[in-house]
Figure 1: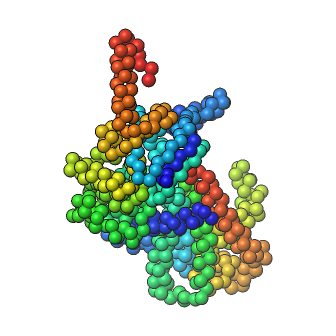
Figure 2 (figure 1 turned 90 degrees about the vertical axis):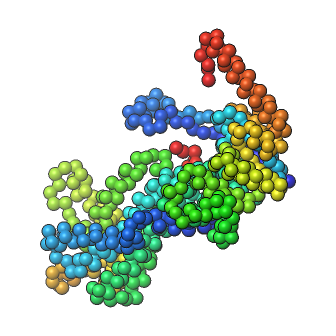
Figure 3 (figure 1 turned 30 degrees about the vertical axis):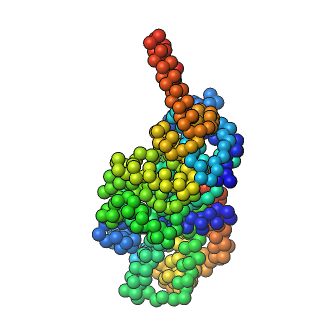
Length: 303
Length: 261
């Protein structure tokens, strides 16, 4: 709580750092802030080419599925990457001026939230072109983003603190994010994982996965990113119908879709997983802050 | 009334042996039960107080703990033991141009820098013209920081700091920055501060400016407060001690001994 009051007292520093982060990211680029959405759009263009054209995947609204999944993911991963470096990068400030250190990961989080909202505004424009209806269910994106933001902040805070002492952290983080991306339902519908199995395990990794598959699927379902991305996506595209509906949306006949939907609903009741993911987010945020505070006093003595 | 109060202050640092040891070295060291670092006391049992309006200089050789003491007063470092109490608006001039970003304009940098020193947006706006005037950089304020020379960065940093109207000014080795003209000007500004009844705490190797600015001086040696007295007296004794030490080194060398550090 005292930490919170301190941050409030130094909010000018926070705003100045956020403003600086925003200004500096696209400095010297002609298109400036447009890159907030151009970047994800170009990435999505690549996937569109790979999956829709090369692999001929047949999914209704494929572009919309990709964009709505990718924006929360990009927010998460960019926040983590920025924060992991934030204290190390600002070492000259940390060594020479007092301010609550929490401001550093917080400024990374806030600047990425602002990028997300820029991107979101342009996304709404795209929706208008594609003819996607705006509904009251859109409001669900706020809890979804808050959950992802809390989770991202907690991880950011601990990674920012550790990377002051161990340069290894940033390498581990960038590689783990690469894996995590594929464990988050951005490029594929959620039932791909939920219905997935290891066909013929022939090494110890695959045996391990096959043996623990139900538990791993449950872990996948309480990952705040899985839930965050799915709630964000279904709020925007499926009028609030939950992700199970999303999961079944790609099936060929309505009867097939309904069967899959019913089976998945029975096996994965939504509420406990959403609550579980929310609890994990909050716990991560608190834990991250505790770890960060414990290390913060030693930042200025490092390097 | 004392505005700075330091009681039985100890500060311990860890000094790593190798900056980035290999995994093999690390494992071997662990097997031998070694730690990867030494501990040493940068400050040992410092107690002192500074009254409002006093100007105090700190002298001593490199590694005697002067900058550590200043870092503790500026709240950048935390004491290992003991207490530090500082009252009023503190302006740490630890390194000028701190937080100066090469991609931001001079104006944006002034606002960022001022907020780090505790000034609100509104307060900075009110002081903006004075800051630019004092730095004499009017025509550069809209250019990005990377186009500034080192001297310009330092001038702007100093100007922001002295214009924030602090109660206590902590100064680390920044006397005599910039060109001859700016040196006179900034020294004059510090004298004005003194006249206005502000508190100055100055770490410097420039002994003449210490005697010119301060009535009182602290002499630090290997983390201890060795002497706390009248500035002239401390500086004279410190100079003599350095001369004696150099003479004994020269003598030892003449006799063929290696200096033991």
